[in-house]
Length: 76
Image (cartoon, rainbow, N blue to C red; front, side, top):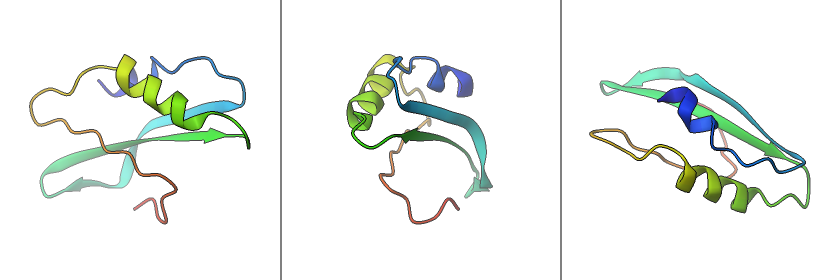
């Protein structure tokens, strides 16, 4: 499931995906956390890129949740 999240990323120039990797606080309230970092140049359509990743990726099942944090202040 983890690697499948990064697989559907469309090939857009100037945008790269790092991860998935365990979060520094990998286990919070009994839930395992992983994250992807999407990095792009100025002017790159990162919003469209993330939208395509989410729609083309595996569907959420059971207790799996996907959350998007735009411009996070901290990676904890």
